[in-house]
Image 1 (spheres, one colour):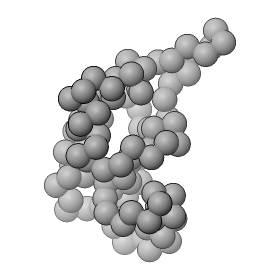
Image 2 (cartoon, one colour; image 1 turned 60 degrees about the horizontal axis):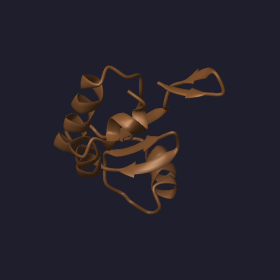
Image 3 (cartoon, helix red, strand yellow; image 1 turned 180 degrees about the vertical axis):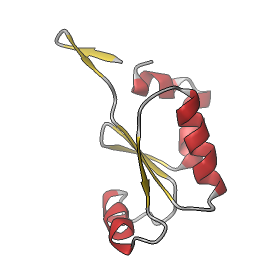
Image 4 (tube, one colour; image 1 turned 90 degrees about the vertical axis):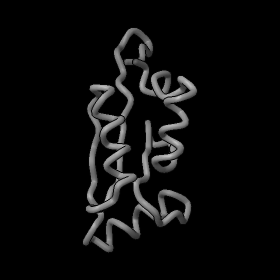
Length: 94
């Protein structure tokens, strides 16, 4: 949790995934291990959601794609690297 002007602000976390994606499963496990709330959007069969994700992620078409407080973090490898470096907990304010 982050403290802002005396109010508690929890980071908004969004993850976009597709079924059968091992990297998606790995990223989801990491987020779940942090015991945080996140919005999970499955784009497997939804071309409209995929198109919107591609625009939001700067043209990236792979999944997963993760956003924290509307900032594009990247995919699974970037999420894991943030965690290894100790930066993920700071972004999540844990």
